[in-house]
Each structure stands twice: as structure tokens, then as C-alpha cells.
Length: 171
Image 1: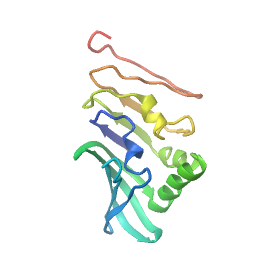
Image 2: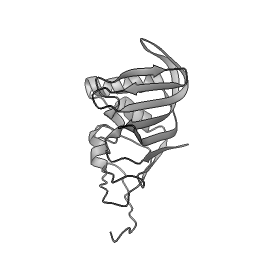
Image 3: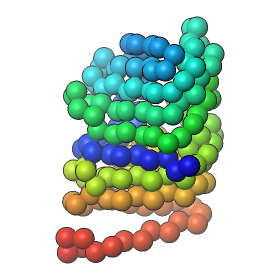
């Protein structure tokens, strides 16, 4: 299974905008968790099954995220299966200890296809500084990025990076 990330927004740092403090759970069912950040107004909806939170997450499997900024969906992540407990632990480890090992393990469970064609530009550096593909995050799976029609910024880290470009709009 290849995780898909369809990005249509203008803020490449969308991933953590909804999770950053003081974000809190605003809605919870066994198949959906909605996290709202009152400071940014961003929301993240996690879809899945078996969600059980009794103070701390007890069980559940996340199979998708929808990220909303200003009432507009800006990204959808799908086609993956992550333990809710492992994800919350990874978020806490990044936030509390700057430890990316848990998040690295989750993103490395599957190849990733990031499609930014519908966006107003994608900057891997913004995406990175907001804790996805960060220098601290070591993704060992293959990542394919399809850029937008405007200037995109891509980069790689240590390891077997391969960046292939196609001519687009004269570039």
C-alpha cells in the first residue's frame, strides 16, 4: 500500500498546524477524531476504526487525515494504517523531547506519494520545518512528489535520494 498525500493548499507546513498546542479533541467517535487548534483555527480529522480514548489513547487504527485551514480542506492523507497509540506517542515525543524516531517509523511503514499539483506551490523546506520529512525525521520508504504549476522547492538528506524533474512551464 502506498500512502497518498493530496495537497491543495498554500501552507506546506499543514501537518502540525492542527496538532500544535493548544490543540484539543473537539469530537470523538469510534471512527473519527476531530482535533481543533483554537489559536490557528485549523482542524485535523483522523478517520479510522476502534478509537478509544480514556484520558490517553487506548486503542484504534488511523487510516486517514483531512487537514482544514480557514474552513477549506488543504490536504488529505490516505491509504495507510497507523496505531492511534503509536501516533500519539510519536507526536508527544516530537513535542516533548524533539525525538522523531516514532514518527520516522510510522512514515516509513509504507511508500509515500505526495501530489501537490492542486496547490499554489510546495516547499519541502516548509513541510520539513513543520515536522514532516524534517532533518530529524528519517523516512526510509520511497517518497514520490508531484509538484505544482508554480515554483516548488525540493531537497533531500543523507542517503539514497533521487530527484527527477520533468520540464514544466519552461522550467
